[in-house]
Length: 117
Image (tube, rainbow, N blue to C red):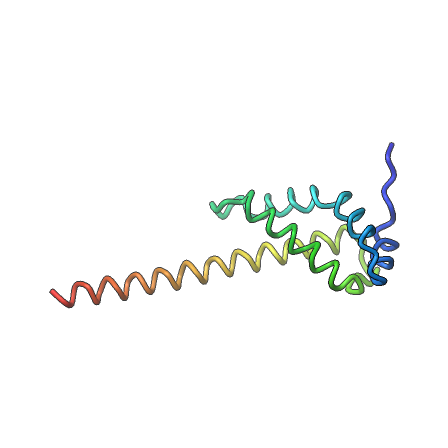
């Protein structure tokens, strides 16, 4: 059985700029994060695969920028999947706002077009 490095140790190494630690964390956890994000997004009817890829990148980008945010009060996987869940929710909200804005703009253009007749 393959053993994985301790995530807390990797995060400590990342605080010093160790990119190998990020690579190790990514190799160990990215597929799990991607699957989790995809399952969170699946009911949305959107392109869950593409969005899950984007969220996975966002999660690990945030971890690289702020490894100190993991304080050990909860298990690493709980923290990681909470981060992924929050990113998925944020992305869905962002897309809903865009869709609502586009719908309002389309309705406005439709009214303008029909007033001109």
